[in-house]
Length: 143
Length: 143
Image (tube, rainbow over all chains, first blue to last red; front, side, top):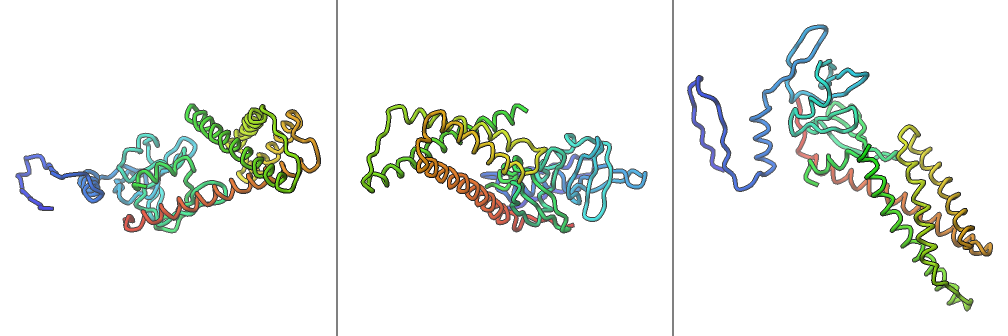
């Protein structure tokens, strides 16, 4: 693919135009990076508001009407509701009634005897994907 | 809730088709074996309708599998017990249990179908996990 770059003045809006025969996986990933690569969301950490880069999020969980965001090692609370965070990006998928997972942080999955799919994250944490959401995961992965 | 009703109805419909086919096929094989053994075989015109009635009744315990408050293994055991009860009751009603030999044949076919469906479902889940793991390769994004 030929790439043309045109540097503009800071007063001009930055815009990326992609001309393609079809939207391949690589092009979709490039779009995702351009749209959300550097995006962050506000989270509460020890009473302080911080900005957490979206790409560091492993999963988001709703417990007792509170929403918690997990990265590799830490957990943060956010004022936003779970349904408001479903559109963080194409990599974020609902995996149960109370959880959204970043599929880029999944290392592997395993079928369990109780008709659920256990997924092992990059930090070796294990989560369960309800059977009814496995279809969405497969669709998202192009299966 | 609407989606669950739709899913349950869809599953019950396909189960009805599979049970009807399984029973008609199993019965056909049993009759063929009896005929080859030199026994007299008789089949009445309303036998397929009896099969459809029994098949429909046997799909009703499926709703047990959707009661998420009950642990999965307990649901399987409860489903098997209730389904066996429904099957035995229906077989008495339509008059299929006319001898000990028939009782053993029917219950054997039923148990084989039950185990076969359960094993088949588990293999399907494992196959799903294998496909997802293949698709997840080169998908990870470390921090």
